[in-house]
Structure formats: C-alpha cells, structure tokens
Length: 102
Image (cartoon, rainbow, N blue to C red; front, side, top):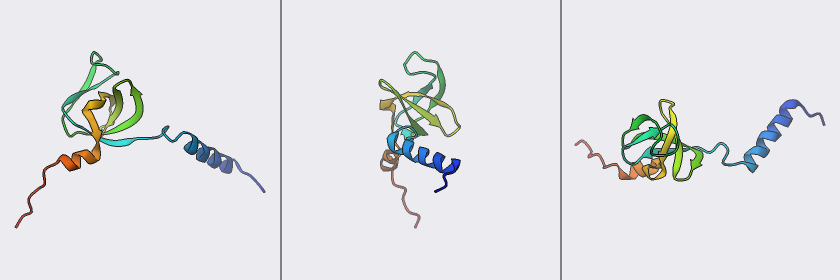
C-alpha cells in the first residue's frame, strides 16, 4: 500500500475533527438587545461598534466568563455578554408574522 502526503494529511484532519469537535465550532446567532461589540471581554473594554437588536452575528467557540466572541457580517470580531446574544433560530420565532397580501 502506497501512502502519499495527502493521505496522511487527510487522516490527520479526520482525527483532529473527531478529537477536537469544538475547535472549528461556529454558530449562527442574533443580538437579542442593543449592545456594544467590545475589543475585549468586559464592560470597560473599548467599544468597537454598536450592535442593534436583531443583528446577525456568528458566535465563535471563544468564551471568557460571561463573555462570548462573535463575528459580524462585515467581518469585525469582538466580544459581547452572553445574555445579549442568542441562537439565530430564536430570532425567527420572535419575529412577528407578516400578513399575507390578498
């Protein structure tokens, strides 16, 4: 059996995916209430940008205490309090139904 470098790389990637499932975990999320995207975890950290309620973000697997790291659609990465962000599916349930045009 001949083993190539690509075969070894593929096996290493598969093993890492099994052993480290959270290493690449990202989750679609939405900002629950208006808040600030912060440079570092904490209320005193520099504000990078305001995040209005219902802003779509991607939650990374980084967390420090009650702070989670998120990335905006524009590509900015920063920190928000975990109470200020929820799963994207929650936004769909909370959105009011639009009436059908007759």
